[in-house]
Amino acid sequence: MCPYSKTSNRGGTTTNILVTGGAGYIGTHTCIALIEAGHTVVVADNLSNSKRESIETIKRITNQEIPFYEVDISDRQAVERIFETNHIDGVIHFAGLKAVGESVEKPATYYENNLISTLVLVNSCLKYGINRFVFSSSATVYGENEVPFVETMERYPTTNPYGETKAMCERILTDIAKANPLFSVSLLRYFNPVGAHESGLIGEVPTGIPNNLMPYLTQVAKGKIDDLSIFGNDYPTIDGTGVRDYIHVMDLAEGHVAALTYLKKGAHIYNLGTGQGTSVLQLVKAFEQANGVTISYKMVPRRSGDIACCYADVDKARRELQWIAKRDVITMCKDAWRFEQNNLHQEV
Image (cartoon, rainbow, N blue to C red):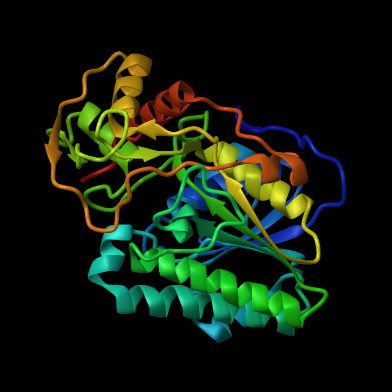
């Protein structure tokens, strides 16, 4: 038995969940949370931004075998073969391109990949009678809006094509739920996932130079990158740097399990965040405090597509999903650094 294995902490009937993008950062942690909650998982991933080894690590942590399919979710025939081969009770859909900056540079690629993959997957669900669907959306659908972001706000993802693809997928899934009374979908708008599994065995492994702040921080701390580039110090925030709602990836993963557990007919939107904003400089200082290291950083111009301030109103998820983020920023920083230190093979 792996020393990090845990027994299920929920009752109920075991269900078999297809996790698309399940070899990626959030997907792997959600697979662990699902298994710990008593479910079984099937993973589909094209490994464009992940590695096959992560599936073996999930097995090591959970002591569970995991069927894995290296497929692109845009491939209809490949997706249907998964449904034909496995008894699937529900789907959690992570697969998709996700870099805000890259989406500004390559909008056609993002629209094609993210929309087609969602359409292929949901049509396969309808064909095979799978009516439980959890969608990985994003707080970027709020665009420039008043904080805290509330689920009832209008969607204004005008700052980047990535956010537009998420908003479009939300509309598609909402319309499908209206047209199919048995179809249940949770649209999870989550904020900025950081951290790693407490074992230190699994975490965020970006390809090349990191797009996200925390892996950039850990690689600077490790000496793999000379200094951290902070994009903009002239925002109308507490210290001029961008403010985000950083959420521990395992809290986020457990939010997906809660969404699946409390799934109800129709389409329902939930924010998954902490409800608190932290600036880039505040996160840097927290990382230094948590881990006893010094982070070298430099200020550079704002990045295209970024907004000044973003954090969640989390009351609806608390009320309807019985879920709340439990891990604080110091824990996020400690877990991220533990993972970085444990993974000597990572290359920039």
